[in-house]
Image (tube, rainbow, N blue to C red):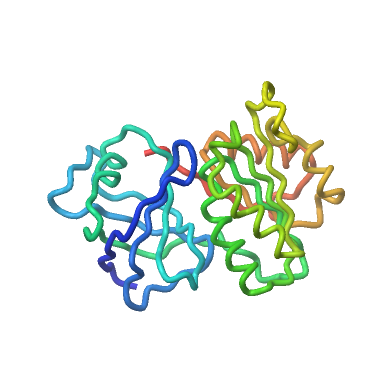
Length: 239
């Protein structure tokens, strides 16, 4: 669809270091769960040498009233400008783009591997699957350093309660000194994957997160014998 203006409606702290931005949905703006947009800060807003446009995955579901994106908070010109943008200000949407969407074969389970902010496309997919009562079996492996840095964690736990086809496996890589964390610990390993997915050749795998994390996940799956044709990836830049 042609570029369109969207109005910043709200911003919300999701967890330590992560903010969500919600925009009024432009007229006739449709997308598939897992797709992304190019978001452009309009004239008069300071950006940086990389320009005023960034690619951001849509975290909201396709039928939610607003369009939500989420970002880690870093001191870059683009993020500082977006953080300081007054509510009611317009930005430009281009898109949607991308093929990081659920496979049409609903008979095969889906295994989501998310590192940090890579959770955004999966939040959209899980909202869609849960509200539509999809029969697709989904396991989400979600890695963060600490629970307080895990965006959407409580919401994902709620989905697990109401969606009998969804299982959340959260793992924390820096929680060794915490006695209150009862979930998995450490980075993704074949041991963790096999614990929850005895047959690693059954699912289609979807990997999303920072480039280094996606590369590490891919190597783990390769070592476990998962065919490359069953792996989909989406890498996130830090901006």
